[in-house]
Image (cartoon, rainbow, N blue to C red):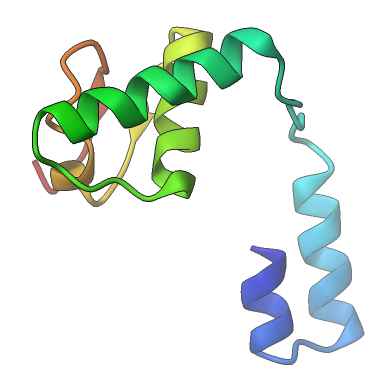
Length: 91
């Protein structure tokens, strides 16, 4: 989100609104479990003949570690992962 704001050259007022919005969210740092899950996600993707970006694998791994559904408008990027629960209006 911050990258998009920088790319759009947002002014201070909009930037402050974004920062206030983001303050309500927690940032999770990687740990051994998340890193191992990321590696398994990448491995499963390769075994199934699917290319998955490192960023998409981090998103999927985080959802798996948190036992949370992954909400996406791009379910095709994740549907090959058997243990991942997807929520999408595009599905």
